[in-house]
Length: 208
Image (cartoon, rainbow, N blue to C red):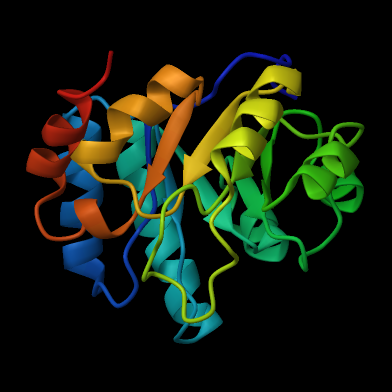
């Protein structure tokens, strides 16, 4: 397990857009690792497990060759089978303790939280980082959780012994204040979907 407080990712945490065909997915990932990205998350809600496995295998080959890590959204089973570097869990996914037992101490495991209660309940769990969001309005999910108030964001960042990733509606115009608030990284889907390299540079240009 990653030492508490040590962030396993870059200041930007890219999450793959839904619906990319294999070559487009690899081009997306290649552009980001070319910009210095250390960790990507593969997120796919549609399609078959056979397709997901092929995607993950291809992405792992790319990441391994470039010194980057690959996290899978939700899928502990696919992580085990494919040998990915870890998983990102939601509130309704396999509990973190069971995921840690299955994946072992070397896996990177993160958990999404959406309010102060969920954050505090997560603190004793065997996690490497926490995500908090949405920190801005987002259109990525059909039924997103309410935007986390700034005072709750500040409380979480003050209390957390783990790196905290902000997620939801990240754009260059709001990235700087979020980093200043104390987020270790910002998870981004939409803004990195069409031109990931340019989007990466635009976001990083706002980093304090």
